[in-house]
Amino acid sequence: MTTTPYPTVRLHISGEWRASGSGASAPVVNPATEEVIGAVPLATTADLDDALTAADHGFRIWRGTPVAERTAILHRAADLITERAPEIGRVMTLEQGKPVKEATGEAIRTADTLRWHVEDARRAYGRTIPAPPGTLLSVRREPVGPVAAFVPWNFPVGGPNRKISAALAAGCSMIIKASEETPATAAALVACYADAGLPPGVLNLVFGEPAAVSAHLIASPVTRLVAFTGSVPVGKLLAAQAGTVMKPTLMELGGHAPVIVCADADPVRAAGRAARAKFLNAGQVCTSPSRFLVHESHYEDFTAAFVKAAEEVVVGDGADGTTTMGPLANDRRLAAAERLTADAVRRGATVRTGGLRPDRAGYFFPPTVLTDVPDDAQILAEEPFAPLAPIRPFRDLDDALAVANSLPFGLAAYGFTESAATAAKLSAELEAGILSINHCGGSVHEAPSGGVKESGYGREGGPEALDAYLVTKRVSHQLE
Image (cartoon, rainbow, N blue to C red; front, top):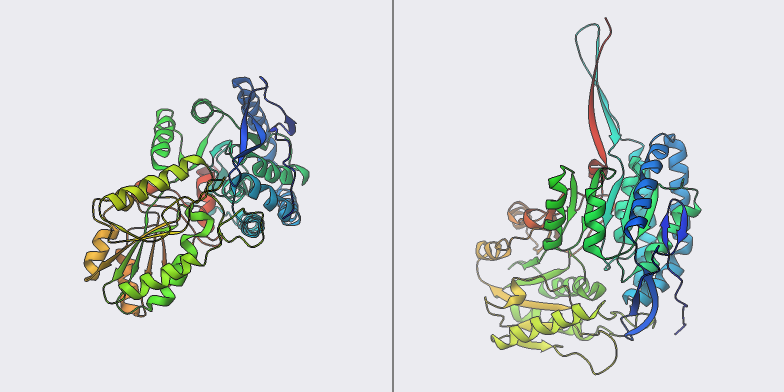
């Protein structure tokens, strides 16, 4: 196991790396060891005002930069992300915990997301509308302006870059408040853009007390769009703040993704694919499968195969090449995993594997499979965001769909079936913005992702990703 030094983290404002104006900072902890490995600077109000001024100035420059020039700069940034992916991955593992191979892959995919958005922005066409003689009637698509973006820690490079890449490709500037738990990864990403030749002020990076930073940036007249990924309660709070000043928002919020394994599915294959997705990033994925509804004829076979897959997961420090699942990212997630497991057991659930924190340093929790989970168990209503898998049988597909749709969330859903008719029924009736059939795939840059109901609104990925960052202007020009 090689040791990667933890870099010094700075704010990035108006093209310059700098410390907090007050010198205030917070510790950064390695979740695999619980050791403090560095510090993150906490922006002051003055720092935030400087970032707002920089974003305002940067937008005026960037929106006037020819598309070909913008494209060249952003492609250079993508190339730098690809080149630096191994180092970005190592730093990510130190501060977030996921296996280094997984972390490096995240960085590489991030570069591809940027390339997709850059090329798609070249086709952000307006249109000319037939009009009476002497009149030109047209529609223009223009960048919305400076964006305030807020992202969590679970995908420390992929999360920020889904917003940065779409916003900058559309011609916007941005202030991004990345997670204080994974700051060095975000800084490494921003450095790729800066080193590619991005004009000062177009992309600014800040950290700080979340509520204070968000309130200040959202209230500023400079900010024209608020983009957020995170929990439903925080998303509602930020949307309400933006609503008081009539600012549009892009909200990618939490979920509680159901998996329906139908009577005509292969239960062993379904279990293998679902387990791989469940334990990715230790279950800390908004689209992670988290409620497993299995037809009663396949219940035992599916459960046995799922337990076998869970027990084959190698839990350990992500820096160890043999590890396939790292620790949870912080003590809050560890406490939640313990609480949800204990609640389910207290109400009658059976732990088929896992269930107890290992006796070692670090925020580790094993892959855990629960059966006989009663209706009132908290894990069936609360997104676990941990490697917990409650499995329940069903007899009638309509009943399973009713259970799947019963929560206020609607981000992702999954179904397994060998029938085209059943697949069509699942596609039509599952209430989710992201649906996968016969696999548990998550977001891809070629296609839109986003939620319905309380899981948010707006889309990231695909041609729809640019919509939030562009405004539509109708121009009617009377020639006579």
